[in-house]
Length: 265
Ligand SMILES: O=C(O)CCC(=O)C(=O)O
Image 1 (spheres, rainbow, N blue to C red):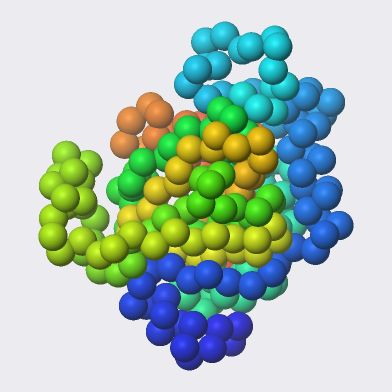
Image 2: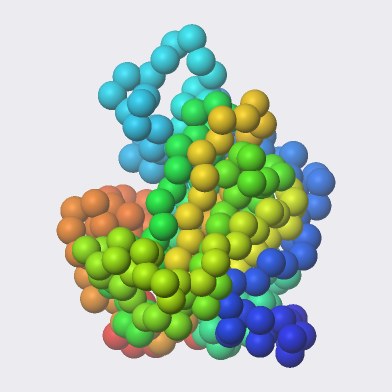
């Protein structure tokens, strides 16, 4: 067991867990460098469709600014890049996932949230499971690994403790839920570079803008039990999010630990 009983109880009560260091200084240097190489086009193993610019730069990039300062996120790196895949498979992380999800674990996707300096915009309150409803049961856990120090000033994650216990809240009802007097006080979770936090797929969270001159990259790794059913994508955008193969339209989720099951993800 990687977690103490106290840590496990904290996660069960609050739906998130600030955790310890999982990346060394060397690994941080390599991962930051790789993210910069991908964006600068020095390597070309990541399909363009998995690189998304901040809205201001989506139609037209600003040649006067570093490309790195214009990218909002890159996804599916763990399916295409050995360094990022190694993070998804790190025993320090997967041992915790096993404590929270059980012994049979699949990986469904990752997002390197770039939150670029000066230009990084807000990610609004959401529950990951509502954005990705195609797994049943809706039981998934994410590990968010900081590649730079994530602070309140540069847009660290803020969570609503215990909100995972409310179940999935439909998008059209979200505002009413957030304005309700029963909603818990938001808690910002600052994470030092190389450290991580875990959150439940139903936990409400958001991240702020990044107006600072400091980068705030965070790698979100999303795990599900191998026993989950895959029900198909909700719409075109969602289908894109779920693709994980070498070619468009492939949905072969990566086995991380334990076994696979016939008819499941
Ligand atoms: O890092 C961010 O800006 C957003 C992260 C997020 O929403 C997530 O990991 O689910």
